Amino acid sequence: GDSVTQMEGPVTLSEEAFLTINCTYTATGYPSLFWYVQYPGEGLQLLLKATKADDKGSNKGFEATYRKETTSFHLEKGSVQVSDSAVYFCALLKGAGSYQLTFGKGTKLSVIP
Amino acid sequence: GAVVSQHPSRVICKSGTSVKIECRSLDFQATTMFWYRQFPKKSLMLMATSNEGSKATYEQGVEKDKFLINHASLTLSTLTVTSAHPEDSSFYICSAMLAGVPHPYNEQFFGPGTRLTVL
Image (cartoon, rainbow over all chains, first blue to last red):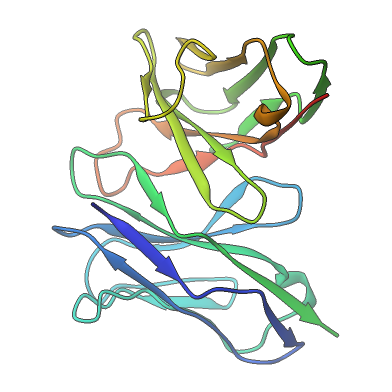
């Protein structure tokens, strides 16, 4: 079945550090890929997405590129802020006809001043 | 746009009672809504898919008689936890999908979640 694997956290970084959160997936066909962010006590918010190979999703300084050859969708940000502290979930949505998201286990990021 | 609300945000109840959680799409119509359960430090577990006007589809291992889902309109789905027990304590999150938007442009919009504590 489909699955998403994220690097285990927690990840603790100093402000302005470079962030990478690895995400790889297993799925047949051509899934769409997503990063969601969950701030403490809140639901999930879509951070960025990519719907086909080589697409780059970007938002709020975060980027991720859909790499089909490596089945990856790593999240990156050049300079993190304290306000980026949250849990980040990688997810995939399988192709046409399916509406179910498959989530990774989440990676908690803590950014310290 | 595309805002999803949940009510209540927090609820505490006694063991054996029933609790209803509402999920509303505020500014769009949603033919499909999803209910998730999130355990501490874990990912979201899909419980069921709710389609307006029809019975919900439950994931394997989810008791449909315990977690009653009703999707009576294009903007409202409810989850009722019946005869709640302490092990039902969790964070419940709903999401809604825009009606009529084709893949891959359809997207799930998530509610803020409901924290259920059963004493």
